[in-house]
Every structure is written in C-alpha cells, then in structure tokens.
Length: 401
Length: 83
Image 1 (tube, rainbow over the protein chains, first blue to last red):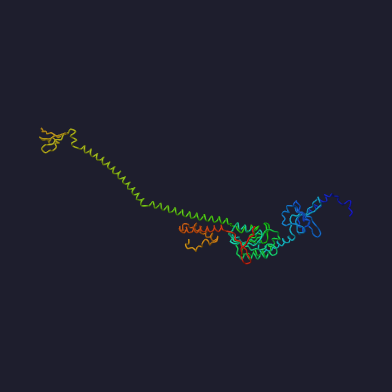
Image 2: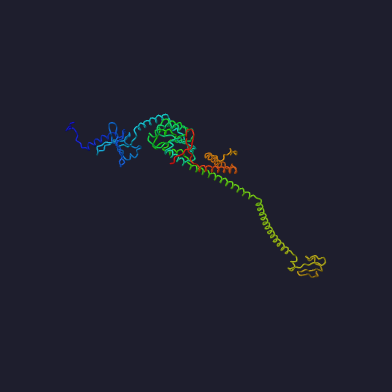
C-alpha cells in the first residue's frame, strides 16, 4: 500500500500506543468481560502474580492475575484447564502488549451452572417453598438431633465437637450420605427420609465449603423437596458463609457453616441448665428457710403471750397488790394514831383546866357545912360549924353572924 | 392443694426433662399458697425437691454425647474418627 504523503498521520510510537490504549480501555464491554479459553504458558513467579495465555482455536490472549486476586482464587490453575476468566482489557505500553487483567476465574461451564441455579430458584420460589411462613421454630432443648452429612470429613467432626461442648445430654443419630458427585442427590433424599423415621427434634443438613459444582447436590430439586417435606425442622449449614444453596432457602433455618448449625440447634447449653438448676436449688432452700423462720416467729410470739397470761405471773401481781395494800393501811393507821394522840392531849388539857382542885391552887377555898357537907356558895348557906378546904389541907371554922 | 398424688416415680428413673419439670412444680407449689401447706407437707415437698435437684445435677455431670448412626433401618453405635 502506497503511503499517502499528505493524508496519513505522522505519530510517535508512544502516541500510537496511547491511541490503541484509549481505544481498548474506552470500550466498555471490554472493561467488564468474561473470556473463555484454555490455559497455556502458565507461570507463577516469586512476585505472586499469575501469568498465562488463554487460547481457543483461532486466537490467544495474554492474561495476568495480580497477587491479591490470585490469593482469593478458589481453584488451582494449570496448563490445559478450560476456564472462564473475568476482568478488563488493558494495554501495557512499554511492551506494546494488550492483555486481560483477570480478577475472577471459574471452571468452564460454571457460568451455566449458575444460570441453572437461578432458574431453579425462581421456579421453587414461585411454588412458595421458600416462604417464611413455612418455616418452623427450632426447639430450645432437643433430646434427639439427626445429622445428614458425610461420615468422614471435617463438617461432622466440627459439629460433634460443638454439640459435645454445648449439650452432651443430647442423643445424636447420623444418617451418612455422600455430599457431592452424581450419587449424592438420591442418597441425600433417602437419608432425609430415613432420619425422619427416628423422630428427631431437629435435623442438621451440612457440608463443608467448596465450589458451586461441589455444592451442586444441595441445589438439586429432589433434595430441596425432601427438605421441605421433612417432619422435623431442618437447619442447613452448607459451604461457607457466602454460599447460598437452594436447600438453604428451603430449610427452616440457615446457618453459615456446619459448626454454626450445631450452635443454632442448641440454644440452651449445659451451662445454662446448670445455672437454672442452681437457681431452683436456691429458691427451694430459701423458701424452706423463710417458712421455718415464719413458723418459729409465730411460735415465739405465742410463747410470749402464754407467759404473760400465766397464773404465776398473776400470783406475783396479786402479791404485789397485797403488799401495796398493807403499806397503805399502815400509813392510814399511823396517821389515825397520830390524830388520836393529838386529840387526846387536847382533851386532857381541857380536862385539866376544868379540875376543881386546880382552882384551890389559885387561892380559892371550898367551904363545906359540917352538918350536911354541902358546899357553901352563898352567904345564906353559912352556919356555925364549917370546914374550909384550901390547896394543901382543911381546917374548921365557926361562922359569926 | 390436692393431697392425693399420682405415685411418684423413683428419681433414678426420671429423665432430665421430667425431673426438671417436677422440680419446677414443687418450687411453684411451695412459693404459692405457702400458708396453706401444712408444715409436714412442705417438708415432704422440700425433700422431694432436693432429691430432684440431686438427680438433675448427676445427669448433667455424667452427660456424655451419645452418637449413633443409621445402617439401613437399624441404629448402631457410631465410631468417630479421631481428629
């Protein structure tokens, strides 16, 4: 092709490259794209970044996964694997290279699985199988727990350790079943039917983490329906926290992991029971103590009243009364006595004052007629022979008229 | 409060739930019409209550997780793999 001297652009390498970069990085579809192909030239240098080429029949595309995204990959990459890689197209200018900067990688066909998952989910949801009203409560204190999971593997071990720690009183029955592969779905259905015949209080349906393919049995329609038909409530703990299988939606309770499922099945632990028992014991003892104390108080008060009303007390009290009376009568007697003396003395002196012989002391004389011994109180009574009595004796006198 | 009782099971025969339920009843009965129970009745209830506490305590102490598995229709002991 003859370059046209006048119309073609003259650009530097950088400018051309920049132009190419703008084109590719400005294409929105290429900035958020899934690319399917086979891995070749895979390398993993010390930096931690992953480099490989994706190719199909006619073309190849260089890819890189940066270290941080590489650490989060859930599958191991190697040459020959068919994968789908998600990322964006970028241009590495120094080498004039375009490449896919991938952040997520999955096995080929997993995208198809996801579509199927969405389809089934929509269908079963429309039937009402995931309705919240269908979900039954989990018993607080189960006596018997059924477990449907693989007999080998960490999920069962973790669950048994958790149950042993939280509620060793409970009786566990395992219905072992494969949890991935083609024979898993029918085996899981049978296990769920069989374990229900043992009438457990709750069933744990569990499986450890894995890819969407590994967990696919728990998206199987028949298994989901068996979960719905279960007599006993089901706690589903499949995969990691972010995995949601259709059994998770159909179960009565979803747990993020198998261990969490075991915890949710035992809301009341043996520690709670021991505490509860200790409370009951204390209530019992304190009730009896109260009752005995009350009765004792009642008996004491009766005893006090009895003592108060007793005859001996009455006798004591009467005795005291008598003493009191005696004391009072003595007082009265003495008082009366005193009064009488005073009165006596009074009378005595009055009597004394009236004593006729006292008059004689004062110089008066008592004259009496010798003849008839009458007292001469008037002149007319005087006669010849009279006796004169003075204070210290008497003498005779002859009256002269 | 009814004086006649259904024959009481020996505490050794009670499951944890049965023993606990009866214990709850006894404590409620003692808490309730405390004045109506004769002293003798109360003492009997109290002793039964203590026996039930002992039974529950013994069950809690002795509890060891019992694990079995289904083999077809039958239930057989399950041997766990050592971690």
